[in-house]
Image (cartoon, rainbow, N blue to C red; front, top):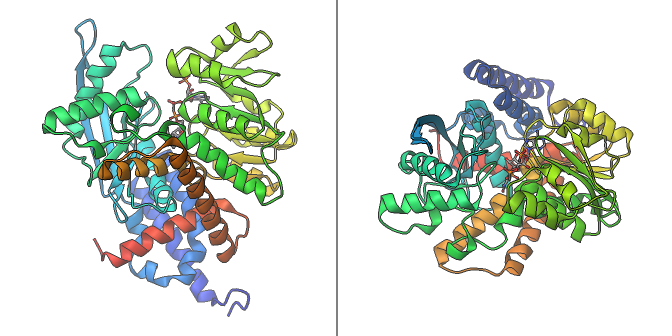
Amino acid sequence: MDLLNGNSVEQRNRANDYVHEVYEMVKKRNPGEKEFLQATREIFDSLRPVFLKHPEFIHNGILERITEPDRVITFRVAWEDDVGKVQVNRGFRVQFNNSIGPYKGGIRFHPTVNSSIMKFLAFEQTFKNALTGQPIGAGKGGSDFNPKGKSEREVMRFTQSFITELSKYIGPDMDVPAGDIGVGKREIGYMFGQYNRLKGGYEAGVFTGKDPNHGGSLGRKEATGYGTVYFVEEMLKQTGDSFAGKNVIVSGSGNVAIYAMEKAIECGATVLACSDSGGYIYDPNGINVETVKQIKEFTNQRIQDYLKFHKNAVYYEGCRNIWSVVCDIALPCATQNELVEEDAKLLIQNGVKAIGEGANMPCTEEAVLAFQAKGVLFGPAKAANAGGVAVSAMEMSQNSMRLSWSLEEVDEKLKQVMKNIFESCHEAAASYGSPGNLVVGANIAGFLKVADAMVAHGIH
Ligand code: NDP
């Protein structure tokens, strides 16, 4: 018997063998799906102690089932461009798990979209959505369509064609998409309009991230970025610290990045740098978020254009180099695997104290380990960026009740959700033998909720 943990060597071996065998099976079944395998590996590593406490999950084949999507839909999206040429893209929707609610997760339009990226995002969403405490299952979708350089009408025609096919598989109690990279309220508006046209009704609850003027929730566009800052503030509180007086860098300058910057500044921090896929800007006076909104949110220019308005700022080519800026807190809010081990080492060398993942899986596994080894506070994406989907679930509630909550009401609820998420991650980490490790805590807390529901619902 292992006296420390109350488990026999046989029990430990059984749990380890189970995790190992299932991972080998997942690898074999999903060859070459780099991002999906990275996301599953990271979860599996955390879950070993769970199978010691809960052998019934082994008996019920939970790991085998939770890593296999309920269904993956791929489809042709044909549309006509402005010069009359037929274009073809590929559409995806991965409906990963609906044990605790209808499938829920964003739609991404970006040329890199492929099956591996869709599956990793939908898999992560399973645990993230469970952590919010709301009744939402997990999905993700998108297309390899590149909205950059397309006219307004081209975006509309593409989006209408995309949703014409996807409309067969979604609905307010079935699957509720939202935005993600390349999809904001304009694209959600086109999807919603086309869906209602096809169905001949008005199903407000089929999408979230809608314009607040027609069914959207106030506070949704701010939710992911604000939520990330609320989560990091909770982490800092544990060490008697806060955002006040800190220097922060934020990668990206899209929806998540803009509102993470806005909230960090409101909390008393100075944001020194932000980026887009071309490069980053450094402003010694602190980034002016209103200017970034003008450039990126309203007119879709390049972040370099910030220099036209702020003469002291400097632009550097190459977005990765943003991690060389000396800071106390770094919030990667752009895309997956944007922060690798050598960036982590540089940040550590420059004295970083806390990392909050605003984007999905922005840090590689090696980068996360490097931060943890040096005691840097680390808020993993599935917990730290869950605020967006949490407010999406609030949008679903408001649509069902045909009511709208005020911005203050939504923000108050968001703050509470992020605090609860932090506490459940913190507690799960402590009770499963990894105190302070929020990566392990988030994986375990999210997993337990979904696994319990899967056991209760029987084998299917
Ligand atoms: P947006 O499309 O609004 O913005 C993405 C931003 O990241 C753009 O500024 C883009 O620049 C920039 N970017 C892309 N690649 C890089 C790179 N390698 N380095 C630096 N910047 C880069 O997307 P969102 O803000 O909505 O999403 C960002 C991340 O947050 C994604 O991982 C998404 O999955 C995640 N997320 C989003 C949620 C939401 O509510 N929107 C919810 C939860 C997670 P450019 O303009 O040059 O392309």
